[in-house]
Image (cartoon, rainbow over all chains, first blue to last red; front, side, top):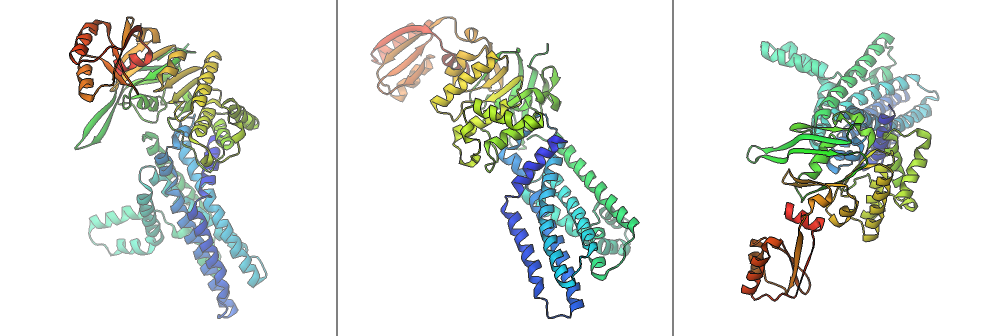
Length: 255
Length: 304
């Protein structure tokens, strides 16, 4: 565990110095700050739009950070050979992959944390009270981002940063629309083969929509604790499975 | 006691694609490195030295054969607990400081957390770069970065050091410093597996040398055994043109062009033939002497 943490710390130091991290964080913070300009709406509507906009911003910002940083960590180390002195230590490839994943996740969490603080401050400014459900929504966004980071990290064990970025982005999009779009395709499909293919894609793709508590946050909908528990378990298991697959491949790879 | 390094018929074939086929980087390597020895691993570029080191550290997998470190297969990450490795060109994140890099490696090597910084500073002091401990690596010269690499290799107090070109990029003072350090480490009982091109440095510190040529081991043993037992003849003549040089090379003469003369290294059994050729080519014999073959000359004879 100590070795995983050392690799994670190095990855965090490396990622937090990357330009893409600073640019994306500043951009999202600017969008969140600019949402104060929505004063043309009535107060109730304004708060709803503000929450909707800010949560979308946190979600997309987090996903973009996860893809950009997760896709480059391992390939850059292999390309620049900074990996050699590390794997020449008593470090297994699995420890290395998990360490890189954790380092990236902590960096992304820092970005999400900054955006969430700005969002929380805005809410407090308008409502004069702290919305505790906001914390829950951010936590589940973090879980979604962990899954995306794991996918990017796993793909980056065999693909270049560009290919990893494209594939992870496509999985992210498909995972976000899978219930509505791919679910619809399955229902409409009459051919057994195409139905089978759609079903396979449907079950293989992560369901990212289930982590999105934005609507509940905006409309103050109650969500059963059991459902939240199921979603959290699903997210953790999927993330672990993807990481194990990535680590297993990386263990057989020559560096 | 298990040997620090043992390879048996170690072979690596790289697949280069459908059109280019395959390339054998290493072909049936058998070496044994004794505990406490300094093992010089020699060979021209592309001979398979770095490939061997990569297989010893499990960066690449052998096509066939096996390698073991202290009796355990190299695929076992625990073997690397006893190993300190210096890459040919140490690559570290440029934003990190030497003390951070060496501390990180101390942690990875399993050094106790509370002693990590102290051990890192000791390693930096030992390699003579303690004063640069807090300077970002991106601002250090190539030679100083090389010393950071040596410090990270030493920080875990390994029993076996695998050093790929440890004096690469160092100035003469730095080279002397590293050579003295290697002697010091040998005296401490460390086993050192050393790949280098600078043979004059290896000659004085190695207990055993192995010469690789195109992936195959062509000679191994103590430097005295690898060197030709017979004396060699060194002849000095005037500067020569490329045609003459080629004619001389054809009769097994090593030709070394110097600023104002040409040095010919001649195998004693060819001496009459060379003298006749020199007479035919109207090359004056300025000086001739006999002496024992150096490791560099042996290397040129075996690997060129």
